[in-house]
Structures are given as structure tokens and as C-alpha cells.
Amino acid sequence: PMIKKEDALAILLRCAKTYDQTLRPYNFLFVFGSQAQTECIQIKFPRQNFRHLTGVDSPRLTATQFYNACVNKRLSLNDFQFHDETTELKLVVLPTLLRLPKSSKMVGTYAGHQLFLSTETLIGGTNACMGFIPDSNYPGATFSVPNTALNLDIRDITIAPQKQVVAVFRKFRTDLKYNHLCMINRGITIETLKLPEVIHSYIDFDTLTSDF
Image 1 (cartoon, rainbow, N blue to C red):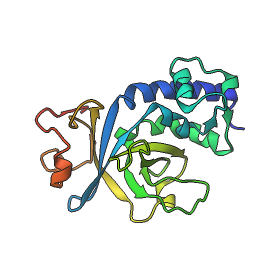
Image 2 (image 1 turned 45 degrees about the vertical axis):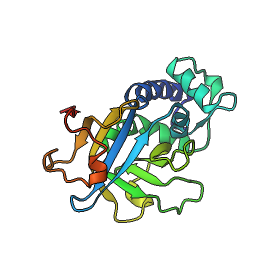
Image 3 (image 1 turned 135 degrees about the horizontal axis):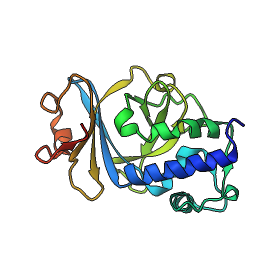
């Protein structure tokens, strides 16, 4: 293997900390498409979905126990194993993928030709992408949750044409509306961003803050 298990453990602990601090507390609204036709997807990052992104198995720990062990730096080398040869590929790109709200370029619908993979919406770029499915805990839910990380060009596994990410908004999970701008495409400002009424209604433009 390219990655020693000790190195994998270090990546898991570091990535869990990033996930816990920068993703789990929030909901994200990814706006994509063109100015003429804008769509969106709402995303959350629950504890139990972190393990999916790592490609490791933890036979003695549930997904939530695995997550808590990582965050609390209590995970041991005996607590996990590589699922298959894709595990290392996932671990290599995971630190970068966890910056998705700032670094994503494209959104695509999974083309479904890799039988071992079951995901719906992919977000990322030419080097890696993250897969999302509707949150099964809430039937008819408006939120999607991550279920895979891929060391692949998003264009190779999604239906063309892929849509461009226009802007990404964030809110604390308890907030009613999105009130922070994570990224917006070059050449667009909040003032010139054209949004359908339904997406517009998700955002609190009066209190909007941004990272830039």
C-alpha cells in the first residue's frame, strides 16, 4: 500500500477535527448553474457520514462511535482497516475535499456506470469530488449528506454538461436562513447574483457576512 496504517490514522484524526470544526456545525447551500438557470442543493455533514468519506471499515465501532473516537483522538490502529484499494485514494484527497465549500468548481449528476458506487450528486473539480445522497433519516428531506469521496475527475463520472458552482452559503444548523457567504464565482457579486425566488428565500441578505 502507498499509505502506512500509522499515516492513515494521522490523516483520519486530522480530517475528523476539520470535519467537526468546519462542516458538522453548519448547513451549506450550494448554488450552481448559469445566471439564467440557477439551481441549488442543501447539504449537511452528520457525524455518522464521516466514515463513508474515509474508505475505512471499523467492524467493532458504529459509524458514530468511529467518528467520536477520531475527534477525541482515541482511535487506535486496531479499530479500523482499509476497505479496499480505493481507501488510500480517498485518504489522499480527503484533506482537500473537506474544503469543498470554498474550493468546489462543478456539480454533476452521477452517471451510474460504476456498479460498486451508489451516489446521486457529485460536487468537486477535476482532481477529486464528493458524492451526496438525500438524507434517508428524513423522508422527503431537502438536505443531502455525503456518502463517498472520490479521487476522480468529476467530469469522468457525471452526466455532461456539468454545472458550474456559482456561490456557496453557510448557516449554523439552528439558524433559519443562510447568513454567510463562503465563496462566489469570479465576475459575480452578491448584487449581481440572480437567484430564483425560492433560493432567494433561503438566504438572509440583511445580515450576510463573508470570508472575503
